[in-house]
Image 1 (cartoon, rainbow, N blue to C red):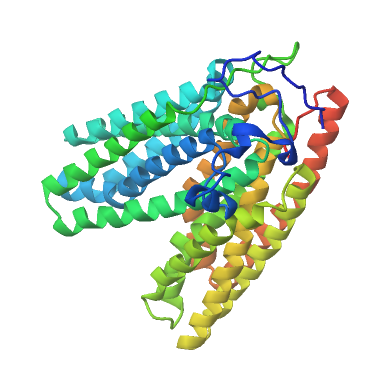
Image 2: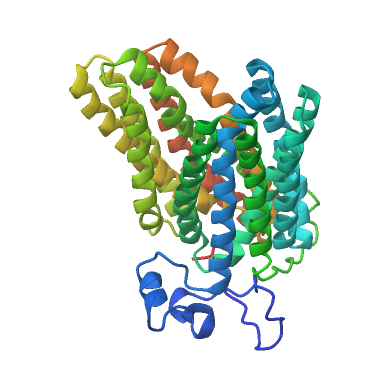
Amino acid sequence: MRAPEHTPPGSRRDSQLDTTSQRRPDERTGTAAGEGTGRGLPARLVARGLLPDTGPKRAFAAATFINQIGKGLFIAGAALFFTRSVGLPVAQVGFAMGTAALIGLAAGIPVGHLADRHGPREVFRLAVVVQALAVAGLVFVRSIPWLIACLCVTELAVSAGTAARGPLTRAVGAPNPTRYRSYLRALNNIAVGGGALAAGAAVQVDTRTAYVCLVLGTAAMFLVSAVISSRIPSVPPVEVPEGSGRWPALKDKPYVALTALDGIMSIQNQVLIFALPLWIIGHTDAPRWFVGASVAVNTALVVCLQVRVSRGVGDNMSAGRTARRAGAAFLLSTALIAVAGGAPGWAAVIVVVLGVVALTVGELWYTAASFELSFGLAPEHAQGQYSGLFAIGQGLSNAIGPPVLGLVCIGWGKPGWFAAGALFLVAGQVIPLVVKWSERTRAQSGLVTETVT
């Protein structure tokens, strides 16, 4: 780890975050760490981990929360708006959404590079504004070509925002960005759920006016998020070392391998929302309502435990070990879900609950490990570019996850669940080896990555 470089007082603008000086948690004093640590309700919320301890963290958390409410509105109502209000065929809507999602992945690396050179806050804010305008434009869609065009712009903006969010989270969340990002993830689960519930009102009314209000409400949430993000201090670019090249992320073989492994491990995100509901309804005697209950169990555990789990992940090596444990938890989960296929009614419910708990524990472990590795194995001057590359693996997992799980887990039955679990287990065991490979490569090249703990 590189020793911190202390910046003399007054040597930088107060409106900028200092990314080259990171102090340990026990060294934080003054307003940077002390906001909300006085008396009153905010102090109690900070002490319990329910409220971030600094103004920039709170501003970014608020912007993210509002943004994710918009996401919840969109994912719950977009498909119905396109089919029931616009009147487009379901198959064509699915094709348009899938095509846009794949095209959107292309923006990650170049936009991440822009964030590295011009500041992630500025790129993030612009991406959210473009996303809002593209979503608002959906109310004028009447044909598939225009739908594809609007969705492509939307997905490109989403990808750009994701690439910029990585270095912004690292800077704002210092000195422990993994814990802060875990806090954001717990918050996001609440926001997306709230947005989805709100979308239910438009779906229940099921009129053109209701769906248009849903779409415009989504765009409004994104615009509010952009406004709030203006309160986040600007993050100055880090000087690029000589000889590092313009696209170091694409040349970093260990990180590319990590991205591929992360894509494999991220397929587990589709188990709960795709494979498990089909398995419960078609291959077990569990009641149908338990599909929703299983999601509720997962959401509650993530909200309550994500930050606590992240406390044990503070560097690359601990993240690698945590990923290994996550792979074992995923195998246990898929094995339990497979066994539920031959169990009677309430026994199947109990076994599935245990499987969902094991899946969630693995998800919590792997999310914390993934957060740390995405930051810790990327050089400080190219955090945005590396963040964009890392997001490609997760994006591809969202695209290939449903068909792979449908073929393996639903098509093959119980053996398929065990095969999927074995794949997660192997990927989890390989990740620590890739971490060592990356550390060794950087040591040989003299490029040391600063780990913020």
